[in-house]
Amino acid sequence: MENQMPKDEGIDHSIALLKEGYHFILNRSEKLSSNVFETRLLGRKAICMIGEEAAQIFYDPQKFQRKDAAPNRVVQTLFGKNAVQTLDDEEHQNRKKMLMSVMTEEHLNHLLELTEMQWEQSIVKWSKMKSIVFYEEVKELLCNVAFKWIGYPIHENDVKKMTKELASMFETAAAIGPNHWAGRTYRNQAEKMIQQLIQDTRDGKIKFPQNTVLHQFAFYKDTKGNLLDIETVAVEVINMLRPIVAISIYINFSLLALHEFPEEKEKLQSFNDYSKLFVQEVRRFYPFFPFVVAKVKSDFVWNSYEFKKGTLTLLDLYGTNHDPVKWEDPHKFNPERFAHWPGSPFGFIPQGGGDYYLGHRCAGEQITLDVMKVSLDYLVNRMEFTLPEQDLSFEIDDIPSIPKSKIILEHIVRSRSH
Image: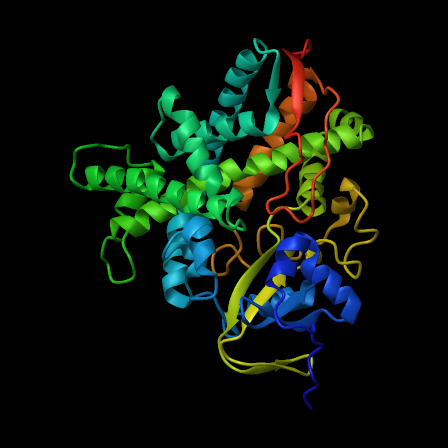
């Protein structure tokens, strides 16, 4: 027997979504006492879901599809046209295989070496400056790392420009008006540059070493044995670059956590494995992606509620990571909760849920963890600094959410013990 799905009454809640940000689904789930409810967004019916059980259903490829689900404004800024995040079934698996082909131990180790080198160079640079805006500096640091890793180190003069282009893709995905259009323009510029690199590689004008991301992607073949069109390759190269730069948000929150919970620094210095727990709690506790979207693939019933084919559906990532059913005292920062975490692929989903290879879980999640751990080591053990008086608050309705001051640091020096 089917029940009437709880409903968020009103004509349209798109403005409320922008106003409430990360709390939009969580607020209504609590008000309606349900982990699933119906609402209206962008003038059409939508279903919102929250929690581990909901995530398990959401990532079932028989029940949901990604094709044509994401709003065009998100495709034009964050994902790019025909990106892996918008594909299903065999096409998705083939593209995911391409992304996972560069997630080998050798590639990841190389990325970590580059990250360490870039931190070393940055400390030298920062120690000569009166103060830095940490978020902006770390974006540039990671932009350098990302381009070196794909096999195309960028000139010092181009770092600010490329950082702006890549960062705008995740900073303007939820923006409206001029900021949104700026994000689209920056994506178009970045895609054009990468497309030219791919074309020059295929024409033999540039030779990238065979083990680089650029070479492997340029000559990767689809399910029919054909080379991918250069536009698609450029989008997926950016799908390697952009998320690395976006780790700057987590690194900023790592620093904020060290400041707000000073007892954590001592634990990080005393216990070798504590950094693993700490970075996971940063990813759970602080806001990153608010939700992911899909469309109902074919009619089905779940928990006595009917899901009709074609209905837009949002899964709350932030809310699932703060679900009191799953997490004890979810609004408390407590890395030690991960010491006994069972590792469910659906209960903890800061970068999507499910399986890396077959599902839509972020291909670069391991990169995120590794880069965060290297960066945390520098913040805790390898450099000293002071935080002047500033506004470290962040708004839960800003997507992405970043401390207002972007964290200003002064008196940066290399730690005496290193």
